[in-house]
Length: 127
Image (cartoon, rainbow, N blue to C red; front, side, top):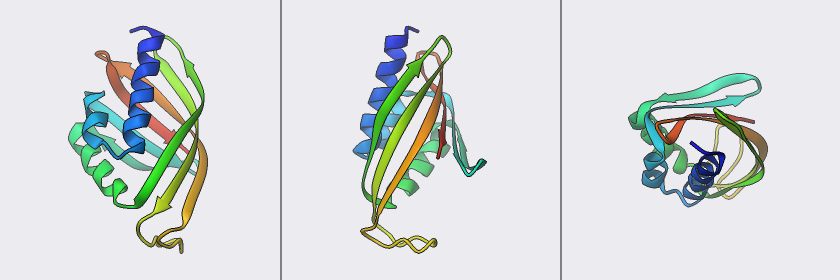
C-alpha cells in the first residue's frame, strides 16, 4: 500500500468523523480494527472489531452537537502513520467533569494508524 493511499484513507476517516458518518468510517476499517484512546498516559477506551467500534462511535457521537478534527501534521511510512490534530467539539450533554451543554472542548493530540488488507487496522488517539 502506497503512502499516498494511506494518507487518503486517514483523510477520509477524519472527514467522516467530522460529519458523524459512522458507516463511512467503518468502510475504511479492516474487520479486526482496534481502537484505543489514551489520556494522561493511560488507555481509557478500547474497542476491538468493527461491531465494538460502531457501538463506541455511536455512543461518542451523542456527546457532541458538532466536532472537528483538523490535521496539523501527517507522517506516513511503510507500516504506520501519525497525525497531529487540533480538536474542537461542542457538547450536546452535560459531562460528569462539570462541563455543560454548549461548552466547547478544545484538545491537541496525536493519532497513530496501522494498516492491513488496504484498510485501517489500528487507531490510537492520544491527548
